[in-house]
Image (cartoon, rainbow, N blue to C red; front, side, top):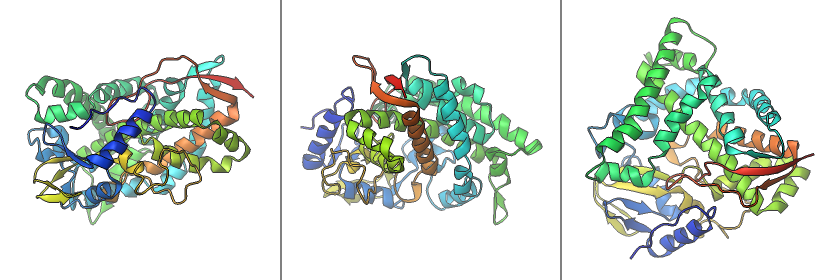
Length: 398
């Protein structure tokens, strides 16, 4: 008998305890839908390291779903993945990310300048708008459309991992799948396609223009491929960074001595961000589909089965991480898996780290004291994501 997973209502401790039990007693578990869940670090690495056996093409399970079979970097395999990633990487370079630092710093200051009084919602007022504005400006779409982006994001995020599995294998999933996935994707794709078509006619100094110009061995990205990457960056980019910032506040609330250290030595901030990513990774699972029968952790998994590799559990596996429930920003090395592993390692990871570092620098510089408001109600996203939807803070200016 496998116990049901707890909620994140307590901020994570109950989930960490449940994951430990799963690693100890059910390291590879088949659920009622025939989906296999993998919890130990070594097994998660095996699943995410071998695209020939563990495919990212979720369309194998639902061939009628255009949302899962289009040329999206996160759900395609080599050799197409290799070619698309090479083309995208020409435009979305480490230099592109590094050059964003002054603008991210400026935006973080402006958002905190707008905070009135001694309380605010660090997610709604800061952690959400900061990455959305950065990514919108990077792409070249109007940042003032961020409420439109939020509407698409909220609808798709309302479908979490358990719903996604139900939609794959359940009997009454059609209407929800259309409403929660296909419709917002259609709207977002149409929006981005208009901007891509404009860049074809009139190039500008933005990422969409650079994506349109990228070329490899005479090949260029199609409009659809540019739209897909823009949508992935816009949605996954802002969601992961928003949750990272909220999770950073949670970790510092639990470890006030670390916050005091950071005020004395801001050079420690990158290491703190890394430990937050290990402790509370924004994206908690990586989904794959088996291309053939394979054995993982002593369990035989048939071909054409969905495998959910738990990045969160891998980051807390005591077989790999000493004392995993202790927040230790001096861990070295700290090879956490928050941004995945292997060929699908997240292209946006450097941008999330940059935004996380600058945002934490700005918060600590602006406020002499930062506390989660006592008694405040806040709720977390459901399974598949680790982050608060809102997080009320009480602050004191320096």
